[in-house]
Image (cartoon, rainbow, N blue to C red; front, side, top):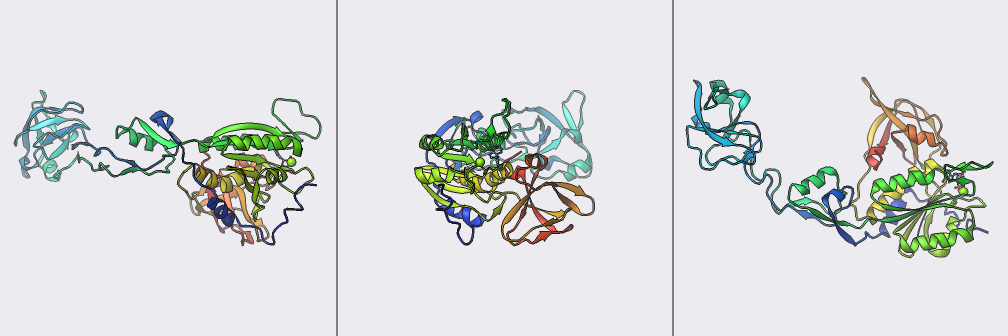
Length: 423
Ligand code: AMP
Ligand code: MG
């Protein structure tokens, strides 16, 4: 006897929003941190606010290749000729003060020497063949503003300000910002250790011959890829048989050594669906089944300190429930700041009939239309077993619980995969 009878369906299924709120409430971010060199920091979660050590830029410098000069020297009604008395190249500051009536050649990033208060672009100057003087036309002179082409010390970042907020999952530009402040290492949250198992007697790994009634298994390849993109360390538990006694020790041992256990399959109401039973035996189930489509039988619980997410078996359900349900929970456990998935409005270029009640996601793509803006198309086969629909799609259309159907021209919400961490 499995637990489907004991886990009575509640009168009303939890909505996704309710389920996420309940689960987030019970999840605490990991505290353990480690210090990593910058080149290993991409995708890691910054453990605490990182202060700016320096003003950036650290000194007034030129935004252009040109000549640093005193603006007051420029004549508004006749050409101005100025002697060039030296160079202020990037990395080679001009030693000394540039007096009134003189200019120095400067390159982008070069320190503005004492004296000058503007930089004129070299393209706007007549330069003597021996480069001993420059001449500016009156028109150029009158247009040059005080401080023009000078990047002021601290205009980008002020020393002491928060450079990067704790909880940020570091992108290349964030790591670069830290590098620009002289940080060689960063303190980040320890990576989540996540174990992944598929369940089902019909499943075989790719690379073997299939017996009758069997299929190649695909869910681990969705989950392992998504988890790696999220920055988790993944353990592959392989394929577990639909056998309570075989499953139990594997899940127990994995739960003892991982932060999160992700299974797929075996959480529905079939005679071979043992995953819920095993979780309930080893730990607790906080909830089972959500008012969503696909992904209704999602199970959430814990075994000791290990979060357990029992995802459904169908590949589309696995990906959708991972992105919309599991991902925000894992991000909280990873100590990452919560983010809302990017949501864009699009015009439906399809019709879709449905019964209100469950929140539903359709595999979709956008295409631009010169008159109507972004048009959303959906995949013709809406089955949650149609894995090719996920490969075809670039995102999901999000239909709210009360939606009674879509007609061409309706406005729909589109969630690009890229806003859910899938590039
Ligand atoms: P279940 O929830 O275990 O009844 O599985 C639902 C459907 O998903 C069945 O058709 C399974 O064969 C299929 N399925 C379950 N796990 C996998 C997997 N890892 N890869 C591909 N299909 C799967
Ligand atoms: Mg199964």
